[in-house]
Image 1 (cartoon, rainbow, N blue to C red):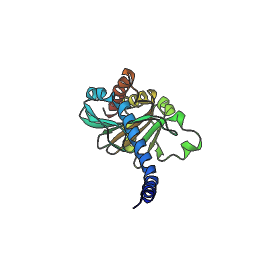
Image 2 (cartoon, rainbow, N blue to C red):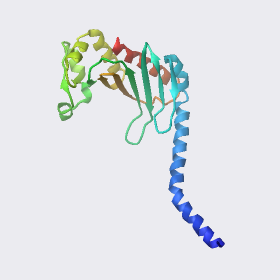
Image 3 (cartoon, one colour):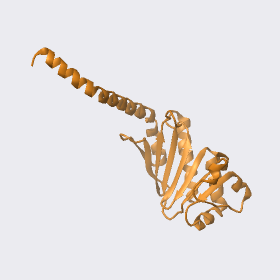
Image 4 (cartoon, one colour):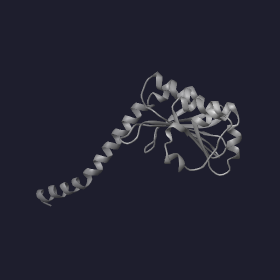
Length: 203
């Protein structure tokens, strides 16, 4: 093979591989950036009896066991179309299926056509603040909401900035927007405090 043919062959291979190299470079950059931004979470994890887990193609998370129940907290950075957010999952079997959101964020037809049956409680101020939609049998949800301690725990979470509390048969899942991958003591305090509030949902 002469030099011209070798150079032409190398050029063709390079043109084929170049997009993959770009994607690989972007992926490595993103992983390094994620690790750097999530590094402070290593200091938070022991405070809530957990460990930091960073894996390819998944959001960094802290997972462990707190107050006798397993949990997982996933942290997502802000994107072009979505804000940063924290999602907390606590495993606790024997619950019910229902989604709770601040009523102020439900507007017009969006509220009418949301999934599930609207579950009212005997407390007017709670009904005014929280939209509860139960899927399937709503009896368990109504029994849970009949307890004023549970209602107070829900209101405390929504007032602290959580935008969704979803109960399902094996646990509870909560979402809160914010830059939790940002460094500093304030982020650590928020994470620990929010997890403590979330566990109050389960007694």
